[in-house]
Length: 475
Image 1 (spheres, helix red, strand yellow):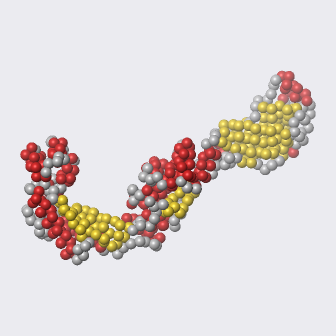
Image 2: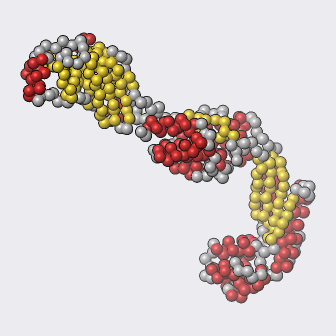
Image 3: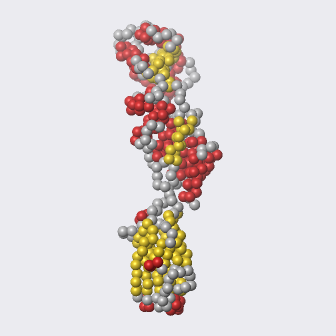
């Protein structure tokens, strides 16, 4: 398993904050009241407001009262908070006798009774509060509740955002490996009945032979590649005795090898051949995909343990009409030669060349080379994201390619694609970690805790930071 991790990349998102604080000792009402230890925090959908209101310098006459009313406000919204009332002697007892308090007043104090009011309140969070101002309306009232003076004074400019999980994505650099690729194809060479010699201009042979040569040329003429081997496997169709079909398949395969050697003067060791006397697997696939009336019966015979000659004879005798159709429409396609050119591509070290090949011939690149180019790109850029997408398309079964592609998909908030890639990322520690990040981004914090704890135990250091975030968010 490729497991050479060299990079950790911080994901984009809003940093969460537990609270904001104002400068200490804010004077109000011409310095007669001051606010200390002011803080506002957001958690679990609630806004917590705390401050110490120093009223020790207030001098309130017997028939008057000072009302301290905080509020959250912006240009369109206002949310008044519980008020604090400091009353002179007569007003204080008036409120006690009548049980009458101003709306939202939570605390009534007699002047001189308290020096510092520890103000604490909680209100439900609303989005408009993110950029609201915390202000206070300070009023001096006389008897009969007549307001003698009042003014709004600012306390704090809020910058609240809900706590958001900020992922840290762990990418893995694939190990450098030889780049061995294969080009494959099938050719349908026509031979005269019972003959094994190739006639280059017979029927469609010019086209079919050129298919093989074009595949070889595509590799041979590329200066960046080296042919390792060429394999040819010949097949015959099931009609006529098996022994004769074996002779034909073997002889025709040998003839095709000799033809290719003559065109290129390849060493004999490069070309490997094999043959299949009768292509029953191909016949089975053709019948399965057909609409023959007796398809199921023919398939049972094809799949039986009878020897090939008995099998072919029974199909012919039991289903003569279907057999005639197969002989005309399917059997010719069973006489084919499959070929494969295995080749090695040279290693690339020039990043600019790799970036060019990513756009034109990504099949010539290794995962390691693609990753190397990505390190020179702007993280999160379109080119960066596309590089990991190309990598997983070129290597769809590679666990590292799928892990890195999943990280990029999560960065782009494409959770469906990320989930699909993670399913093929294996069980390496970084994959367990990535699934924990996926769960946290999906707000499945229970699963996230479990997976990230496993990743931490497996040595992924970033897991501890992610776990601390989750503890802050999901208290």
